Length: 73
Image 1: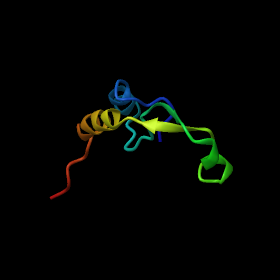
Image 2 (image 1 turned 90 degrees about the vertical axis):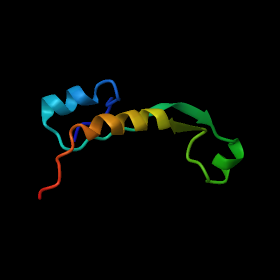
Image 3 (image 1 turned 135 degrees about the vertical axis):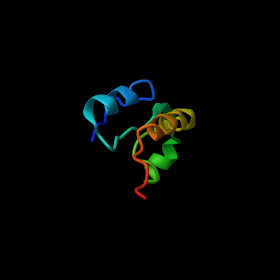
């Protein structure tokens, strides 16, 4: 399963070249700070949390739909 660095701007190329049927992508766009108290109390593992881009996920889904196999029937 292709992953690590898969983004909306390269996913079509990856699927076309590999014939993969699945991908892994975080669509991460950065990070946001976490309150030190949340880390100290165990509610967060690190002082920064990754942020997922809703726009990147939507673009990725739109591109992936081109590669869907239609249902048999």
